[in-house]
Image 1 (cartoon, rainbow, N blue to C red):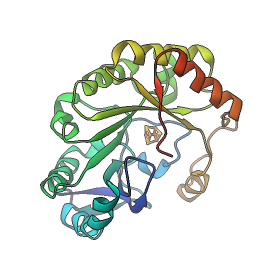
Image 2 (spheres, protein in one colour):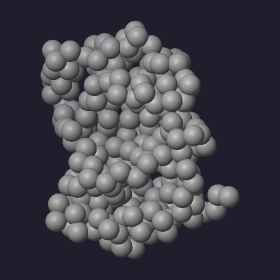
Image 3 (cartoon, rainbow, N blue to C red):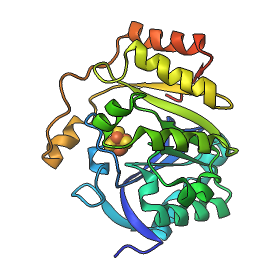
Image 4 (cartoon, rainbow, N blue to C red):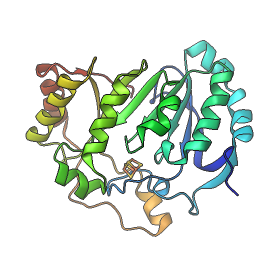
Length: 250
Ligand code: SF4
């Protein structure tokens, strides 16, 4: 049974170095309101499936506390990921309160699909917020993710007013969003609206395919392609030209 101190996770992953500063523990919370067909964590798209399990704040904190020395000496901490971590808002609040009380540095990866008024107190505790933008065309955004772009952009601007470090993450997928028109629209929006515009491009990959097979789902379209090195460089050069800093946690 779900209580405010329990919820569904896909995985607890120690020694992560890609989603924030230092050595981190990633907590992958299940459930996501988007249904991106390129998703590398398809088991996170639903709350309950053969690859998720119910856990409690106490169990997660027991796991996390064994890593405190690594966090302290590397400047690391905990990153909440998914799925979309804010989907289980009470469980996330319970986890973040427990980490905060222990003085653990926190980061979150979010697709931005949330009610800001419900999660503002949680996001305000984050040292770093990684937030996705997947497409700048409202119709294409809705087509690919099933979610309204307007909410994502409003939430991005609201999150920018919080004190944490905000990094926009963009999955770079040739065949979806890696064209120059979309890149320029995305970068212009960030430059115009964010206090310190930063972007991390995440090239599309197919590492999650085995999970699709395990879940009995259709594999992502073969029309999606990883950008070549020169396509990635073009995106980075556009960002520099349009006043958006390119960062990398990979
Ligand atoms: S928002 Fe992220 S976790 Fe959710 S479906 Fe899209 S890629 Fe997957």
